[in-house]
Image (cartoon, rainbow, N blue to C red; front, top):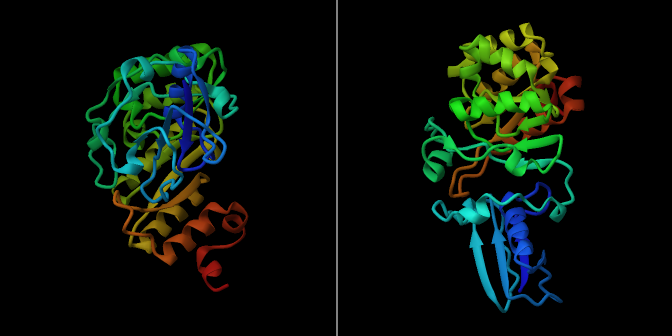
Length: 294
C-alpha cells in the first residue's frame, strides 16, 4: 500500500501520531510519505490536526481519507494498541530526540484544558525505553506526570539512564512546592533546556514562589525554570504574574487563551503582551508599560 500523511498544523513540531502510523505501516511493508496532493497517488491518507484554530487541509485525495485529532474536535478516536505502542518513525521529521508519553490523563479539571475530557484520569502509558530508540534526548508530552507513581518511577529511571528530557507540557507547580523530596528528584534530572511549569492564575502564587525557592535550593538556576503564563481577559493580572517571574529570575512565556471551539479569539492587547513577553530582547530591554507607548 501507498500511505500519505498530512500534518494539518504544519511541520514545526513533530506529530507523534503520524510518526507512529509511519512506523507501523513501514513495518507492514507499506510505502509512507508526506502526501503530495498534486503528484501523489495513495491507497490511504491520514490527516492529523491538533489545534482547532488551524485551518483544515482542503486538498482532495482520491482514496480512503482518515481525519483525527483534537483539532477536529474528535475527543474519542484513539490509535489501535498495536500502533499506539509502536516506536515512532523519527526519520519522518528528521528529529534527533525521542517523543512520547509516560502517562496519559490528568487528575485536575482545569476549565481551559481538554485533557480530562479527552483522556480521563491519569494512568500509566509506556516505559521510556519503548520509544527511546537508543537516544539520549527525549521530549515528553505528559500532562501531569508528577501525579502518577508510575510517572515518578519513570523519572527515577530517566535519571539512571542519563537521558536529557523536556516535559514540554509543564510539571504541576503545586506538587513541587509541597514536596521537597520531589524538588530534589527533579534537580537530579538532566534537562534539555528548561524545567517547565505553569503560572496560570494568582491562586497558585504561593506555590510558584515555594517551588522556585525549593528548586533553587536544590541547585537549579532560576534561568532553568520556565513558566507558561495563561493570558485571559484580565491583562493586568497576567502582567503581574509575568513581572513576578521576572523578579524571581525565571523565564515566563505568555500564552493567550483560545477556547476549544476556536471561536473566542485573544484580544489585540493579549497578543501585544505575549509578543513583548516572548521576545526576550524586548522583555529584557523594557517594561510592558514602555512597550505599550511605542
